Image (cartoon, rainbow, N blue to C red; front, top):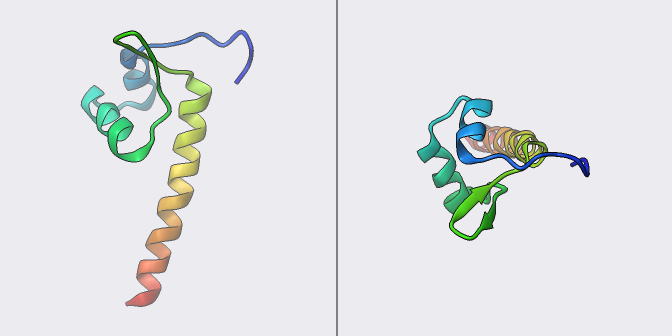
Amino acid sequence: MSIGEQWVDIDDVSIHLKVNKETIRRWIKERDFPSHRAGNLLRFKLSEVDAWVCQDSRTEGRSESTQNSRR
């Protein structure tokens, strides 16, 4: 994350990832999606979001290969 990186809102993240805002809210609750609260507002850093997506996809691939090897 760069020092000058802008904070974005859930609409921006939704557009960036091409997913529904409700999906993002579910990920925050269930999958430790990187978000920050400013009062009642959710704010995000796109660099943290991108890092989470990359990390999560590596984790999912590992769990799928483990499941497949058990079959």
